[in-house]
Image (cartoon, rainbow, N blue to C red):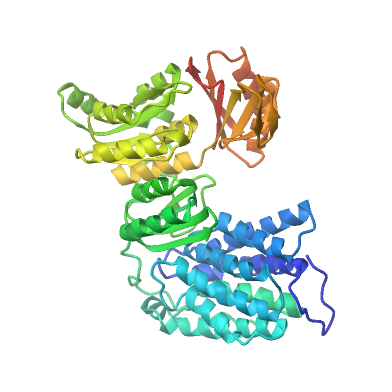
Length: 576
């Protein structure tokens, strides 16, 4: 953090160290006020997690800033961009997503200058960008508070005056929010997201003056009473958030499609990378819209609380989101692995009579070993061979062969995204309900199939499978066919390439040693389960060696091994 200011000393510019300090203080402030903000969260959904989501978003921004300082001595522009980019990658919930766009808007101006006038323009750009990101802006929210902050300091001036005017304008607007929304007025509270933004601006004021602003004691919450329905409680069942790599034109179309599917739509970011947030009833359709727009990843699907009793076997995602009182981030688990993935005896009888079964899974897999494994789990499989991906007609025929009213399609390959989407559209025209889950590797398909439960509602099953796939990071080992330039350096023909999430991360000479290095890199980010899929032509003992490597170095991590058979990559790795 920057040096402490001396008495009566005030900053005239936001240098890199000052931005670093602001980021750290904002993170600390949201940590202190997290529970109080959660407690007043009643809009747009009374799920009690706004404080937590803002805190986690600020934490991601803080980590990104500290990372650039650890790597070099960044200037102000690099620091504010890191803060905004970190928030974009780690944005949680409606308010966290909007906060990330506010920071992005500020970064575009502060990168060009960091005095008081630039700060005033930065806050104006932040408010504008945030409103533009929200499909249907509502007054009495964090957007109102942001606009008030920008308006209060629009005249510019010295840095301290601008920061103080912005903070005071935001605080005044926050107080007024309780009368701008019926949900807030009924609950007797101010807007939770707006309160979080006031905390962030208070951290900025403390950074430039060296003195924390006076904080009014939080108003006591009204006594518990029979709970009224607040706006949003009768709304969509799921919150869907994902990062998306896509161009501007595709994102414009995505906004229109998601706006028709649900509400609370916020799409933030730019320059090819976006964070998408929406509340919907059909979570699978929201994810599929992202697949058609570009490349979605880090998918998080949360079911809002309801009075309904959860179905048996339903659990909370591991590492997929914050644990909150009001919502459950979906990752459905079973104790017996693939047992729940199998169809029922009634399904088999229907198929024998030529009747449509209720639901089926169609999976694209490499190698006859994986095909057999998935078939045993009840899936209809499509084999893919090196350099020979299945055509659209093959996928259409596989869905027809499944002979089901509802089908979950697992392409298990990034390059099959468009082909699978086109096949799904063709079969939908025949009256089959198809959900395309954007699995990018066979290990993600295995994770999705492991939590498939055909007796569950279709939407819930798709949510569970999507969450399981999204929580699985993947890697692949391949042999270089010729000399080439890669993201990890120059490789020669015959080198072993370790690809993590599709990018070459390791170049080695020995398959086992390269596999160990890839595993260590993946597990450095955490994990509870490693899945190894081994081809027939790999060195004897490879799987046993890697299992021992995991047991020796990562005591809390389990390992499961499957044999892919012939015509599969040497090794596929999944980490959940």
